[in-house]
Length: 332
Ligand code: GDP
Ligand code: CA
Image (tube, rainbow, N blue to C red; front, side, top):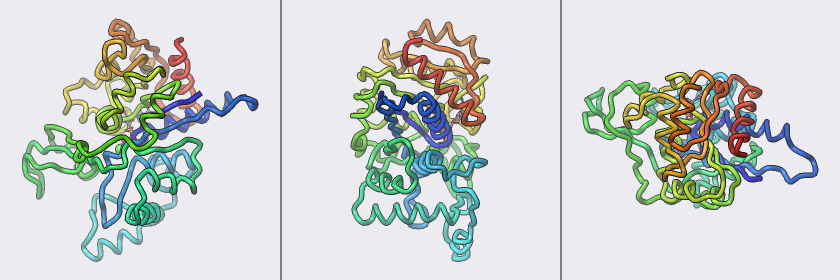
């Protein structure tokens, strides 16, 4: 069996770890192991202090490789910030974005690889040799595609109408500065990274995990060819709602949804992706038990659905969500 997950950072990484746990629990020694490919959003990538930072790729790699800071959900545990303090002593760096010393090593190695001719896919595979995740991790694209927001009003040194990197809006302004649209800078020059379309077309199951539907999954789907591959693959496409009971659980996905005019509800996000039999992307959509009232509307739109607890509290509760996805994908 082959499974593809289209992941952002924390939500996608945690879900995938639960999925791998569930697959391991079910594994029959005589059977070929299930292959899992994670296609990761690179729209949050940026240059910082001369280094290429790939927040979602690193979160997925650290989470699946046992190197994640569990409390934060991103970065490394037992971090120190001595290098960042030195950089700010020179009056450089961005005060709103912290780079820990251990994490910096990853960015230095990646930047070195990119500057000496490796593609982002090659650099990612190299970094993964150390972390040995039990899944293949692919960037959505080898070309830089960076999500920006267009500001609706002046804020600090920025003017209304300016484009601001998504991470600055998200981390510095906590998504509180009003914006009118998301723009993926570089998208017109981008193509899916090697292996991405092939993995989707060759899969038995494609999963949209509970990642941000706008700036994580939405950005991956904007890469030329990826949404079409989801429409045409013979795999079942199953999504997990990142919205529980009308809220974004962790983070500020509700702000992103309102910018694109989608209500913050499990049903609205499922209908936003749409039913595959009506030109959309989903065969099935898993919602939280508290959102069971959404099932009839989803079914009427052609999306099979089920309601189960969707809080990823720990690996066991997340593995149970993955089990529900596998069941929905198998048609039950
Ligand atoms: P990011 O790149 O680190 O922001 O991570 P993702 O895009 O992969 O996932 C962020 C989204 O995951 C948030 O917007 C939440 O809606 C969702 N999320 C986080 N924790 C949970 C959870 O426990 N259950 C569900 N259903 N969704 C969650
Ligand atoms: Ca992200």
